[in-house]
Length: 287
Image (cartoon, rainbow, N blue to C red; front, side):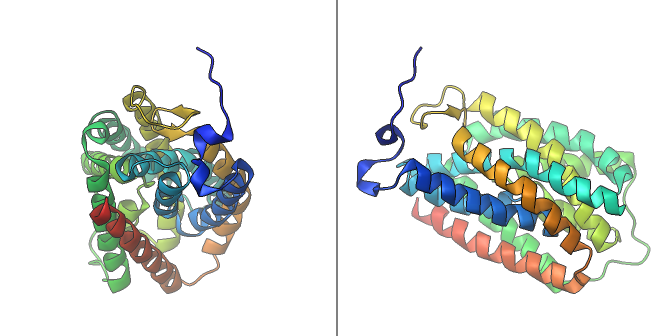
């Protein structure tokens, strides 16, 4: 089947926006989120999803429910590249706890596939926006309160890490984030030093993003109403532009993460999550 594509096919004439402008916006978004991904270990997805939802709804003319799903899928897919770029820098500094990555990854893979292949296809996009808002706000509160874990608490054994990874993978797949909003508080709760937490969270973003991205493509393959150059729920132009931008700024953010005081990192992470939670709450309630 031959696909014929024009600007009018992708952008409604009444919006008056060109392909060049939206690609430029995506590139700027990628620069910003790449830096935050390296700095906070958030993978960029938490920042991308509210903005991509707005763009897909207003620029592409998608219904809000579909816009939310495509934003989640596209935002998560960019983390495949972002996590690699930031993890490389964290690894060079020696901050990644590869033992924890090894212990959590099996559960992350299973949870991600369950979420993206099954749950994501059946849950309404508006409900997903509310779920995103709730978990982002909860994580922000936990980080802002800065409760000190008990000195005796440590990371669980292999079975506990697999279970924790499974839960993180499922929830991450539903909200399109690289898992930092759960893995960061979890590792801090288990007395892992904050700089190791940020670095390890960035590394954990790769398996979460990779297997969720595959699931989003498969589960959304036969969905109608998506714009041209969509692979399932993933819109390729946004994916490519954001990835091309993030690879340059994610390492810069990763270097900064090892220079900032721990309290500032936690506060920045919390403020970011509150802002994104508010945005997605509005989207979910007005869909």
